[in-house]
Length: 68
Image (cartoon, rainbow, N blue to C red; front, side, top):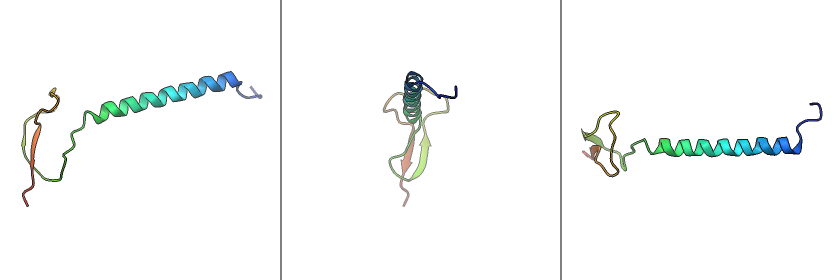
């Protein structure tokens, strides 16, 4: 233990860290797909979906308009 980890132990640990970093990136990508972001600032006029609903790609969720 005083000699520190062997080269093999270090390689295994580094591989584990790389695998966990990839898992975090995948989880972040999945989370990003669950968030709605408006393409511009505006006022919400109507909401067409409720919390927990499953939505199809391209489905209208809210109507946003610029009232200026």
